[in-house]
Length: 458
Length: 82
Image 1 (tube, each protein chain N blue to C red):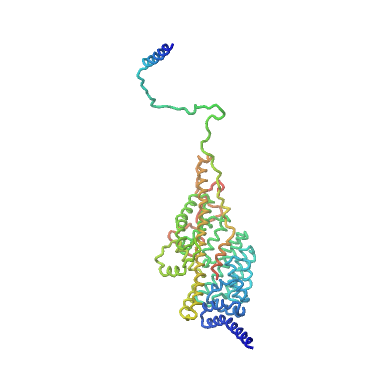
Image 2 (image 1 turned 90 degrees about the vertical axis):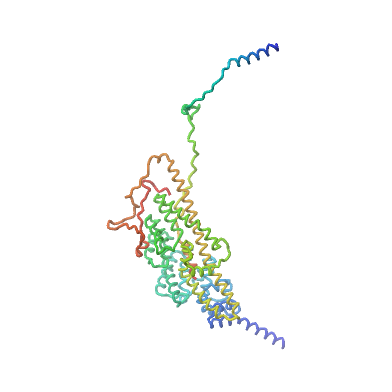
């Protein structure tokens, strides 16, 4: 008899404790301590019903973000049962692990009525495009554009200054995905037509300018290919720097046999960008796996903005700071700071763990961006070095070529690139210290071909 | 015989010394070399182009670097969507 009572007591003891973590999490949510709740909820996985956990997670994630749950294994996430937020977290985890097929599987499971549906649509459309299912990607992207225009729900919801901006960002990203997809399909003219439809107030306007320069280049509309990239010199886009824009300009001039201009662009890139790269990599410890305290750095930079020179590091930071992704992180960080003030001693340990997870994700996110930027500079720089070397070799050979020794290449000022048409009433404006904001992106420089009578050598 | 040989050698020496006046060497102020006139027996009359053969130019091909898609930018955009 005593044995039975003892066994029953042990059973009751553990079953209470099994739900202790869940109960703590539920209590923390009711007290609006979401970060603390996330830590207790993770401890409850496998001990409490998956449905209950998923239901509580639906309330926590809009406040903490998905970062709190990204460290969970798929095995643990599967114990939670199926819910929109759980599927979204699983999908995002698979995306970060570059397991696209599984990411697609989980994004497809996010239900229509959920706050995560719109961002899931964008993710799905993008992943289909990357994985070759371009027609499907275009279809989903169009659906995403339609829904976001109608004010579909997103997470975080009803947050001033964040929700609307995030929805607009999703809308603009879905919109630019369509011409990118057409470009991949080889439908260059259709791609150009869709790029033209995008508003200049789009979040993706800088990328739109650069991306559209490629189809123009392929259509041999070299004036527009250069003009699009020259727009980055306008004051409004002063902060933006995309390394590949310089490359597109360089190859356009190369195609037109203007070797001097090509070399000027390459040398300018080398001087103002490539040579500063080492300092950039060293400043942020980009060559190692070590974590850099970007969160503290970004806060300090915000306070002492005037101290920092307007170099490309400043530009990169400024561009990053404007993205909704950072704004959402900052919104969650504000909630974290508020919660820190009201966290009791008993919950301090849990809170510290949650804060560490958040800071780790923030730092990793910025580092990934900066490392990507550095790699892009190296990639472009290497290609341009190769180009420069070949130009010098070609020019040297041209000089020693007996056939061309006596002939001098003449530039005719009247010869224009064949598909550029200007009406007589239209003026060539030199934009000295000025620009027309509504004409942004439509500037076409007057480029002359120097390849008279000869096929372009490159 | 021995004495005759010694006498002969001695006399030839003295003769050469007696015959040699103080030699004044005068160098030419100009000297002209006619390289065109240098002929070598053979099929080639003069050496060919002395420069080395130009290495075959490794040509930079723009078409190898034309973008085929924007997948890297698309993936980058998804990192900003949490």
